[in-house]
Each structure stands twice: as structure tokens, then as C-alpha cells.
Length: 113
Image (cartoon, rainbow, N blue to C red; front, side, top):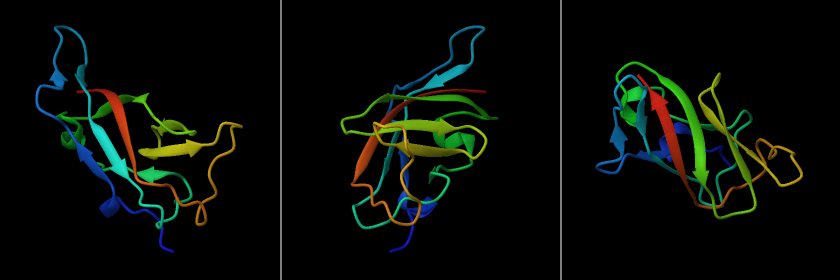
């Protein structure tokens, strides 16, 4: 089976979920959807679009945190690689090329410029 690729990842920024507090980084609350139970988890994590505009920013993504999940995994944003890494409850990362995540929607909080 092929790995989850950028083309299989959807980032949605619902209306009214982007804020610019005075003197603070911009904040947005995007939703990321990926997986279908057939495509495999890529080594290094689920790729995210490189353009900060997808997250509602002009220059850069500074920080991302996963707000809510409904499954048995822990999700971590990898700042260096701009990916979402998935770990099971024992702390082991899913196996690249063989683990097949089900359809998943993550709710994020992102800060950027």
C-alpha cells in the first residue's frame, strides 16, 4: 500500500477561527483530516502543506498543538519536518510503511506570523 502523501491530507480553516491579538502571534484553529485505513503511515509522520497561508498566516508557522482527538493515539507536531507524528499509548511511533491509520480529523491550535 502507498503511504499517506500530501495530496491525501486536507487542512480546513473554518470561518472565524483566526485571530490577531494585539502584540501577540496570530492564532488559528485549523482542522487536519487524513487516513482511510488503507494508506500507510509514512516514516517521519503525516506531511502538512508547507505554505503558512493554509493555516491562516502570511510568513510562518511558529507553534502547533493538537487540541482534541477521539482515538487511542498521541499526536505530536514535528516542527522541523512540518509533519504530524503518531504514537501509540505506550509511546512507540507507528511503523512507517505498514501501519494504516483510519480516517482521522485532528483539531489544532496554531500560532504564526
